[in-house]
Image (cartoon, rainbow, N blue to C red; front, side, top):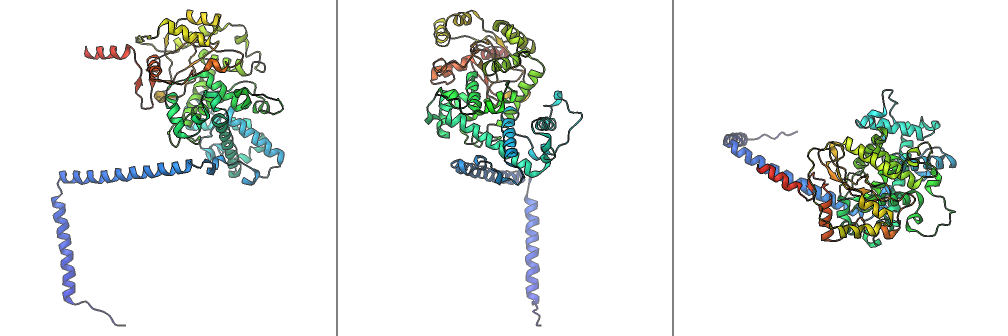
Length: 495
């Protein structure tokens, strides 16, 4: 085979070019001063940021394309026996479906670290006191409730991937059913709005963006829970034949649970958001639904375990509203033999003991007595109106976790336990808030005329009044509101 040889001239040319490139490189390195290096690094960082922004824009466009067709998402598909390979007969399939659906509403909307949680072993050192200390203990607590909800004959099956996928799909379907029930079927009745206001994400954001970040009336959560477990007719006020079996009948619910109240808050918040699907984090709004749900669950569970009277009052009121006949009489002794005023005084005393108040600022009340009478006459009648005018309003604080600086849907501020409950965002322990006086009806939720536009800021004047009455911590951690507090702080800083 003939071999090709390069001429000496070619070799010399190659060596000379290599030497030239090396010399140029050495010259460039010698010219790179610290100032030049900083300039080069700055240029590289700018290019990196541009690529990152372009990538985020593409992800947002992809999410918008997917949200235009929510029926194509796996979460909206119905779960059938064909989707899993578990060998279950008809009765076992229905039993497991009932267990997963009930577990979703009454225990957990989501299971954290699904494969990990199902494959965990029971921890002998686990206690309810350490349940919310970290993610590991939270997963252990979920495992304990799963073992309690699922019959023992399926405990060994829980460690298999097919069972975990099947149970996850059942919970996903139940969440999808709840979203459809609250937003599409009963949203206009719950939130006193038009169907068009909830039809698209743009319409929801335009109509309710202020509401989501500000405050809620707790009656909204009442109607949300009624729609979830009692059906649309219980909220819309239509005719009910009584032949249809509701979830409340199927599950035989005897008392309210912390997860039920927290889930109602999440479903109500999602129904008014611009998100098209209920996920752990909203695709459009970036609302951390899972994190907020766990926050509400911790507040209610720990408060009831520690027997805080302010939290016990929440459960008492919900049980009186929905499960007055089924609720255990021994648990209802404090409700039966104590007047609402007595329970109110105990709840306020408990809040005052738990709060750390240091030189609370004075809040200016810009409303006139005539305006207060006009508002109260719209909602109250007879003795309830007189009792509201005679009851003083005060300023209280409530300690929460450090991660609560973000605005969340509230869980309850209790001034009067008879007719209404004011809902204002939970905040960190370093802040204080003003509790409004409303009333709650014990027997049934108030009719539509009593809650007309009670939770929507519809004009600039009302928005300004809401800002003056409630101090809000936004998602960025900034305080909003007015009164004498900011001016006093400025005077102190000048001194």
